[in-house]
Structures are given as C-alpha cells and as structure tokens.
Image (tube, rainbow, N blue to C red; front, side, top):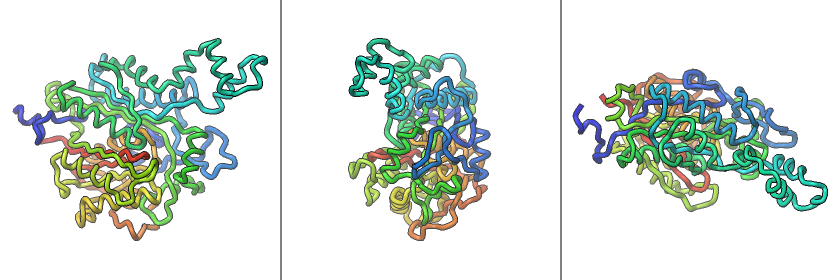
Length: 428
C-alpha cells in the first residue's frame, strides 16, 4: 500500500480498530453479547443488589454474574474495564506492555452514605454525637485505610489499568456524562492523528448502580417506573416510553494507525472515520429543545469523516427511552438527513442493555463495528406502540440482515455534552 492509502481526506493518519472487548448485563465477552443483542434478548431485571422497597424504580441492567473482592462502584468499574481490556488486547494480538496512552471514561466517584455512616460509627464514644462527616474524617486521620481511600479516588481505576497493561504516559480519566465513552474514543483518535502515538487504549466503564444513583436519577424523573415485566421497560421511540433503565457495563477498543496495523499484520475490524462534539448550555440536564447542539454534533462528525449524509447506512441511536431525549434526537437526525432518514435503519441498543451511562458510547461503538462486521442490524425491542411523531425505521423487534459500510453512533449526555462517531468498514 502507498503512503497515501494510510491517510484520510485531510492528510491525517487513518485510525483503525484492531481489538474490542465488552461486558454488559447480557453477558461477558463480545460473542455472548452479540448473540443476545442481535437475538433481541433483554438484560434488564429486578434489582437484588440493595433493597428497593418503597422505590418507584426497582429494575436495572446490573452486571450480577461476576465475583468481586469488594462491592463498591470503583471495584466494579475496574473489574469490567480490566476484563474488556484483556479481551480487546487478545483480539488485537497484543501482549506485554501496551506502549500507548490510556483514555478512560469512568463514573464520578464518591462514597455511598452507608459507607460513610459505617465509618463514622468507628469513631470513639468521646466524639459522639456530632457531625458524621467530621467523625469519619477523624477516623481516617487516626487510622488511614489505603483500600478505602483508593475506593473513593476518581483516578484509581486508570492508575490500576495503566500498571496492569503497561500503557505509556499519565493515564487520562474523563467524565462527560453519557457521552464519556465516545469522548474517550475521540481522544484516542486525536492522539493518533496528531502523530503522538501509533496506538491508544480507549475504555468506557461504569459499575455505579447504587441506591443513591438510582434515587438521584429518579428525582430527575429520568428513570422508567414500568417495573413489571422488567424486560419491557426500555422502549425507545415508542408512544408509551417513560424513562431510561439504569445499567452497567464496559467496552474497550484498541485503536491503531492503519499503517501500524497493516505493518504488523493485524486484522482491521473497522475504521474510526470521524468524531464530532458540541456543548449544549441550555440546561443542567435537559437538552436544547431545538436540537441545535445535537444537530451540530452530527454534522461535525460527518464533516470530520469526509462523508456526506447519504453515505451513512445505519445509525446506532442514543435512544434512551426518555420522552424528551428521544424527541430531540429524532429532531436532530431528521434535520441533518432530511427525507433520506427514512432510508436509514436506526436502532437503540439501550432497549436491551439499558443505559450504561459513562460506558454507553464505548459499548455502542463496539456494537456499531460488529454490525458492519456481521451484516446484521440489531433490533429495537419493545417497539409495539410507535410514537406517531417520531417516524423512523427502528429495525423493530427483530434483527435484520443488511450489509452496511458506514455507521453513525450518537451519544448525547446530561449537562449538554454531545458526541457522535462515524465508523466505516475496513478499506479495500
């Protein structure tokens, strides 16, 4: 291949994906996840991790089939990230020190109230009663607890991953709400395009389903309360959708310059062709009702990829199943693609795995690439009562065999943090 074959339309190194790993409520590993997802299986179930008596939402897409040394969000998030990275590196044919940077999307970390009060109760009687916060700080000053400290430290996950896999430089941890996983991928793409590295490890992970997290999202009226049956709760783009289902999972992608991948004989799974991001200052949690920032995000991704609107063959929608977000996403897609949108299949993985929050963009990128690799469009399940104001080909309820060569994946996060990725099949 000529040097020009390794450069994109703007003269930048083409970025290939050479390894993928994933874990969700559907199972561990790409094979099991894809079989379930393409088969229309739901991973949503009743919550058993903590008491849900009196709560309006009692369902989630938690990953409950793994054994952990400690039950806290950091340990869960690290485990998911570690396992998916092992899988991705094995597929990429890489072992030993990775030798490239790590970009990790991880959930914001803070101690749960149950842990805080348990710690405060360790204070000597002379310090009781009193403010619980002061008491647990006193306990930690008197007898530091490194394990507990690590469990509450935002950067702990990336540090542990960097040590285990031998990444290069300071690991980057980011949290851009529901766009985090896609943002981590974008940072990896930019590092390779800028010539700073030949490869990058990009990870999105989230094991933060706790009672507090559930209650906080419930107070925002963001969660579905259709608990029975759990598998039917997430129903994107339908008339009776009422909120998203909180979930967990992780995905890792090994990104590599196409030139590097070809030189070492790696299998190219797909190309990270374009990335777009725009901020939305409309509201702390709500998206702008005119869809302006989301529209600009999609257009930026297409422009970065050098692909026209009619070049997209499939859209992996953000598709949260919340009344407002689904409406806004449809507005943004219909504005960008116009009448051509009716010819583009659109589906939401969240109808089966729920909303994996900071991991969502990475997980859905993996599924988008798998869509092109297999020629199978995963369905949007629970699509029995279409919203008449949202006219989409959502691949309803059953998978569809269709070969596509370019996919758009949207991630529109709380706080107005929007990211879109364009992925294409391996170049000829």
